[in-house]
Image 1 (cartoon, protein in one colour):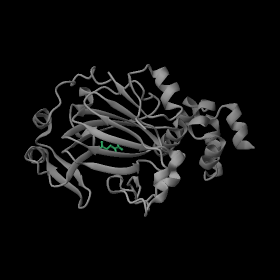
Image 2 (cartoon, protein in one colour):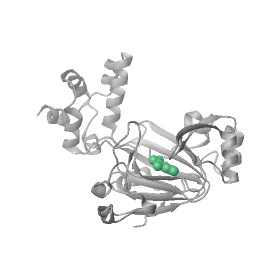
Image 3 (cartoon, helix red, strand yellow):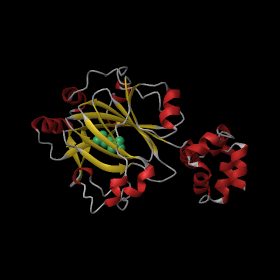
Image 4 (tube, protein in one colour):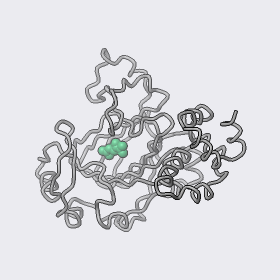
Length: 304
Ligand SMILES: O=C(O)CCC(=O)C(=O)O
């Protein structure tokens, strides 16, 4: 099934038609306002960052550091040694945050993690979920800036078709199904999965809703930027709660967020079941403190 392609909707339309129902979409017209739009190329990247030593990934050999200008030269020669400069934090690239614009769909009440991806033709991240905890997923906007990529998604309703591999600490959850060499005898359930597919080129932004398996293959030398944010504001608040406790600023944090957690947060965390999963492991003291953030209807839910 082809992922629909539309010109950039308003934030309200994006929220009601794609974010809340968890529907993938490809959007155009979002990158043209970037100060750097039209400048991106290997040469541009080399002029700005050629002297940096950054960490890249090789699917077989693991992580390795490389001088960016050497790496880009390898890409031009067609010999980048299987290395992919993947998920480079925007903070590791001076001036990059100012060169791009965060799309208007990333909510201001959540941290938006901005990552840059630079690689040759043929990089492939097989089906994976970046955040696999059922109540804690992240939405992803993948902005394609240079070159083309094939993107294939499988929604959480088809989790049972995906043969997850044992999870390694601090790594995404990968599926055992290799889309490019798929063996229907070994993975018969995969034939029942609905594949949402697209090919993106410069200027396209694909929305990968939380909890969607995604496969991404570059079809050409490629440069992309991804924007990840937590699907659940409540989980984000819990993370900030821990930070505030560490920094001794819990009282002001709780006062700022008193009574703010309501129905929308309940929907984002997957309803009452999700709230229970979050709540039950908390200590009585933490529950007592966190209750102050809940609006009255949610307070009664956790007290019941
Ligand atoms: O662009 C890519 O090559 C992979 C992107 C991806 O897998 C992600 O954002 O999680």
